[in-house]
Image 1: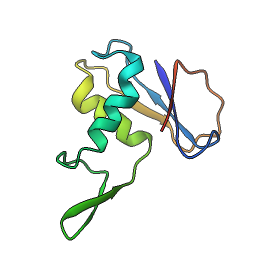
Image 2 (image 1 turned 45 degrees about the vertical axis):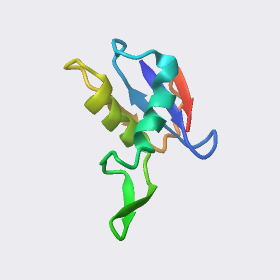
Image 3 (image 1 turned 180 degrees about the vertical axis):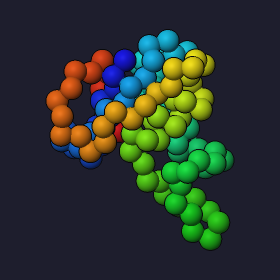
Image 4 (image 1 turned 45 degrees about the horizontal axis):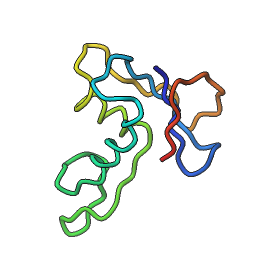
Length: 98
């Protein structure tokens, strides 16, 4: 499955490959990703820290790939970032507006 992750506007997006056989419904990917990335108790490489406290996040499709591979995919076939800041017009199966 190809995911088109849209960021600040329709022309700002990444393409992500994700295996079809994930253990959550496609419709829940965005919500579960947000729950994970916004959880201040969760250590991940996408936090900005000030005085030891997380104060913000900086991420693109790489964070979705990281989350999918670490927490969602139970297979040898991993998610992959296909194209970041893409200018391509690829076919996709799921569009997530972040």
